[in-house]
Image 1 (spheres, helix red, strand yellow):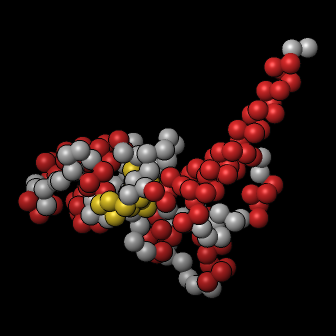
Image 2 (cartoon, rainbow, N blue to C red; image 1 turned 90 degrees about the vertical axis):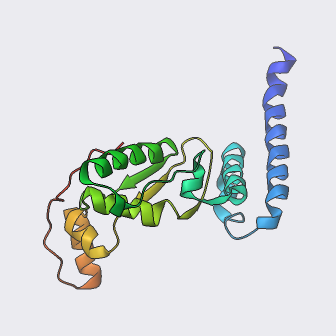
Length: 184
């Protein structure tokens, strides 16, 4: 048996322990209960290091208006300055640009193109969010302003029943959204 084969797992474990100590040191200024989670003691060291790395990346990520996530910043014309076809075309381009930065819009089918464009212009683009450049991260923006809209258009039968049981209220009638979209 080659000595290097038996010593490699030991070296890997030592490397993981060194990385863990470094990550914990770097996280010290941000220390809170999420770092001291008791379940971390049950995690494999590699998984714990990935978790600590993600917390560190979150803490260090800049909070920027979403429009500034783009280079150059994403500025779109005010909704009232656009006609129907032009607005729809710019809306499609804007949604694609948002998707390019891993910003996903959900629950949009109850909104007309103009209403969705106005929401993006007024609420999404100026909104400050942490910009994480880690693979697999995405920002989901649910375009539902209230529970009644969600219950009417998006909640399935189980979610509707659960909500009714928890809140003891009459539910709005379930309806199909008026503007079905196939968003990226």
